Image (cartoon, helix red, strand yellow):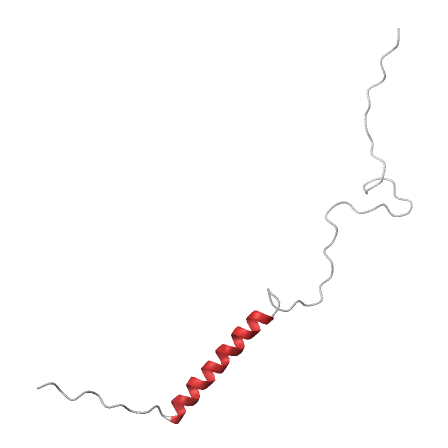
Amino acid sequence: MPSEPARYRPISPRRRLLILALAVATAVSIVLLLVGEPGGARLAQRPPPPAGPALCSEGQSSGCVGGLARVIVPAPAASR
């Protein structure tokens, strides 16, 4: 003869509360992920420093953008 099947036991109130809390937390997390900005909240950031040489300040003539460069140029050929 087969043994008696396991009897149905209702879920305890504590377990129901735990399931409800997990369901609410999951729903809130999903909504925040869908609504929120990708990559999380952005904090105020300073702009990155320029990637090249700096612009020339007043009185500066070399080592900056727009400055003079020392170039060795061959002498022009003598005309005949």
